[in-house]
Length: 114
Length: 117
Image 1: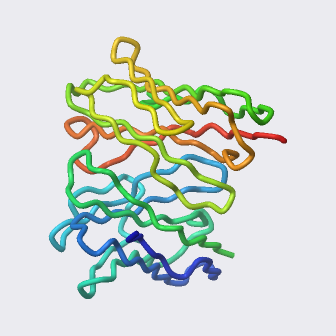
Image 2: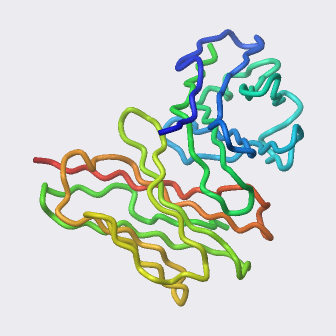
């Protein structure tokens, strides 16, 4: 069964460093998403991406964040200058269509900022 | 205002007990979608069910069943004859396109279910 994959599973970085989290969505899906989950808290929407551009973003997704689909398979989230409060689990998700369609999540990347 | 409320933070049951996880949502949309996801201790988010606002029929899948009631804005999840492998955090989520955006999932805070042998 197709699934969303994410690399790395765990990333440790120093405050102020740039990180890139990678995702490979399900191959016939057209909509891609990033969510984050701070430890012990609920899952929060960051951004959605369709047709090579951001379709929606939350207040969390400020100028420190960017997303890209550099090729036909990868979808990346870049955090330009990490802060301690960026420590969280980051989930990538994809769906075949947009409105209300099921979003399938990857296993997550745990980001630890020291 | 919280749009998806899962009032039960943690539930503990003994194997073979039935358990119901509550979810109450809030939206002004007439078209919206509700979901349940399971997050086992390994951390991934596993999709369980999707329901649109026009389909109030209850659903059963093996030991899992869902009760959608628009009149009370609730979408409750029942596990029958619980097993240790059901131990996880369960999240209810809402997609209400006109209100929150076309692709945003709004999650509740989750209910941790602990099933002991």
